[in-house]
Length: 503
Image 1 (cartoon, rainbow, N blue to C red):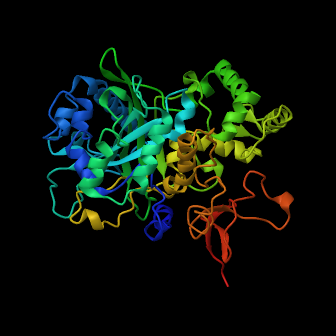
Image 2: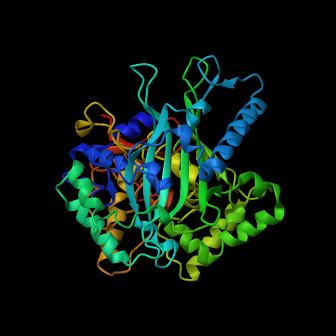
Image 3: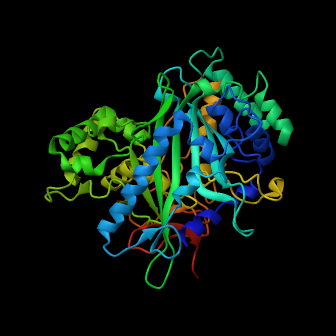
């Protein structure tokens, strides 16, 4: 029910102008044209081969470059099955309704009847802080579909996306960040659509002109590996596998790599020295400043190479993974951070000149630990386990499709991303900071006011008490618009959603 509410709290169709203008390409007919041309998965991975016929998954995973991806996914399926059989003796895991836990059919990954279609293109120049001159990233998002559904009433879309992450500015690209940002913003103001829009995007001066196979950095995968149907004895649950594969250009293959900021719980709790090192690193004032701003990159030695994110989850910080148990009241001995240590570190950093905008308490610290990770972010305001399920241009009437292509988290972040594009275009220093994943940071714009993305119906909020001292400093701004009240959902937490006040 929670996921349904989050999905419905989207006034996207009634916006005067699409929030994603200039920051994403979601026109279904334009995406169809791009998929049939040089932005289909076949051309991106095999640029020397004609893109006329799309690549099916049997051929995709037979490519030498994709062999490590296939092997890694096979291992993840084996680990997932073994882990659940060990954790819950007697629980059956397999393909089909005869099992307690319904596994995604691995045969679909390499089937001649499945392929990935281009479902959206997202500008992530808001990640330009990752490296000087890199200009951030562009993400080509492909959704897995059945080419020949076995049943007429079965949707061809399958619960898996594959993202190709491309450098916004290639290593040998003459165009600068300002020009790339200008092109995207101009495309967002264009009134064209379909084939006309696709043509404009791919001309010599188009927004997609710098996006070429030689600029690929990595592949990211999000797969609904299994789900538990709701029954009289079990609550509904879905598990999403998250993986990252970085391109080794010398070898020409995609190699399994750590997920960004995905803390490896088991490794850290098992190694006392590593735990102490991680604690010292994170509590350093310089790193706490980036932690607060949402621009921190955790060193890879502390990270995991994969994660399983479960949905739905509650609103309380302790219900979000992977940092549950990292922060405890002092004295338990098995936590990474004691509460007094966090408080002391925040005070010390503030004394060193760090101005905290988001993390102002222990609860804020713990929530940031979660939402900066891949799994924690995907568990927050997603549609199922996705933030960009993508546009379905295979629908019978794609131009009239009412399916929302992305989550509230995605749309709520577009004002911030567009502000960064404007700054880059105008030669100004961008503000790369961001709020928490389930509550966008105010950016001086009223565009989100009164919507489910900020403080309107369905927005995530924090139940305020009359006395300011009784409210957590990290969440005092999480209020609701006039006529709405913050109502906790299904737990004892003060986190909830904005709904009409009860009479």
